[in-house]
Length: 219
Image: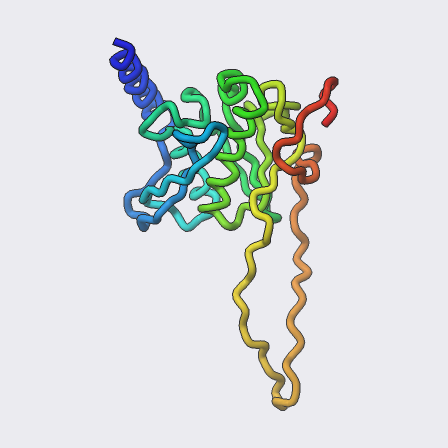
């Protein structure tokens, strides 16, 4: 009876997701081997990569939404999910400097088991999934229902950003053009295009994941 109830709950969850937050996947996109990070079934508080083939967009913004929505949908075994079943990705933004802003529904904070281990596991599953599939994302800022909150569920500090990629994506190396005389290579052009600044108050300096919030909301 417990198993039947569990299966019914999963079916209801899937139906709700199909109505409220369809995964933005275009069947015409090329199928890509995608790594999603869910909980290990053998070691507690540990993530393991699961490779699935998904039609993913080449656009980093849309691609990020696709992999995060798939992560939120959860694995076949619901016991291995890292994020609450009723949590939704409300919005996702990618700034020119590689900072991603993911806005989740309140369920991410209210339905997750309170505790540093479960909260850290949830955020790590998000950052590692983005790292494995979207090289343009350098760091991540998490919002809850459009607002910055001090902690996820009382423990993990959300006031800063989480480092997603430790090394920047390198541009392809090309040979420097030569001058007309052929004696010296021409000086490379300098890009002086200003980078738009993020909205005031939206971002704070990077910090390492796992920082605990101290009493009074000070990290």
